[in-house]
Length: 441
Ligand code: SAH
Ligand code: SF4
Image 1 (cartoon, protein in one colour):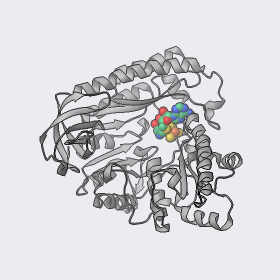
Image 2 (cartoon, protein in one colour):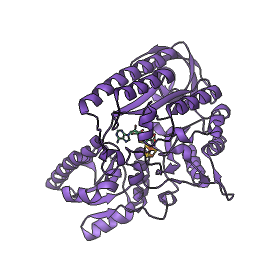
Image 3 (spheres, protein in one colour):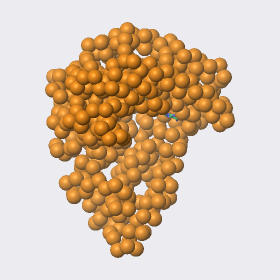
Image 4 (cartoon, helix red, strand yellow):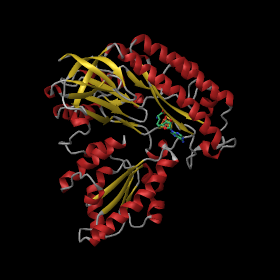
């Protein structure tokens, strides 16, 4: 979501004459878009700020303009005052809901010459202020992110999101469709719909009611030129029948689903306030796979939540063995200030967390390797995103987001082609082009 937010910040700044540059040394303004989800992400902000201050000093010594330094995102939201105390040379501090006010903030900072801070949750939706000519980003404009839902009311024990991104809100269908149409007109063929709980989407449908994610995806599926739709991150609690049916009926929906489970222990899931059991997760996955047999899953895991015993951890390992994941992100529990779990007794020792994470990651790696190995000998629809590393080579992404390299002519870039997968590297696949055009899979 920060990638999406950064692109939108670039959009609102473009009318002021700002454009992206490749290095911070060349920038008249540097915006550090930050993440607060784990402690390590937050720590990085202050070391980066020190580096940016040095760059600014060097610029001034070289006779260039003093650069503006801005901190955006969730660390700005949660620790705005602290940032200005520890790094008083920062000019702008803005939370994730106020980036549409950037032009005005830049002007105010220039006029007043002091720090400007915007970390309230404004009544207006920033999406209403996006310039109509917004250009999409990433992979030569063939793939793009699109935020449809933001914020969270679920208050998991460990998580800062409800405090930093605010209450759950959904964008109206018309607003999402307008942005999707702009993206498709600019050449985008694959859109990933974003939200902290994207499947809790309930945007105004313009007819006095609200649309579900399945209904929105159905409407997007009708857009000429949009071949692939993905969504993340979904919550197991909000996997309903309409979404399961959509995976059966909507061919534009990719058969790859990120469905974070965090833990396989019912006791820990309860302590985390996740609102479902391990068996309910297994059952949702069973129904999803029944609807779309080629569906693969990825997930998020936290090891070492307060109170997690060896037995709880073993339940997580068992769940992983039962489900079989194509990919996963896993973390040791990181206490976040202000969240309920941070103040709980029975914190798990660091060395135990580290050991459990290594065990879990070894199993997940094995499953990922097996999933990739199983691709060899199959034919996949590949969205060709650009040239490969070697001359004459093209590269693209499979329905499961695996990078795939194969030989083919440049004019195929931007199309979807059938590729026979022949080899597996550590993090990518190799193949042979077998047909130059394919319909959306
Ligand atoms: N809304 C999504 C998750 C958003 S946060 C969901 O409910 O599944 C992204 C991931 O960061 C989470 O899935 C979790 O695995 C991880 N995470 C969040 N807070 C964390 C913490 N305090 N310590 C470690 N990992 C955390
Ligand atoms: Fe955080 Fe996701 Fe839980 Fe919301 S549902 S509190 S975003 S982990």
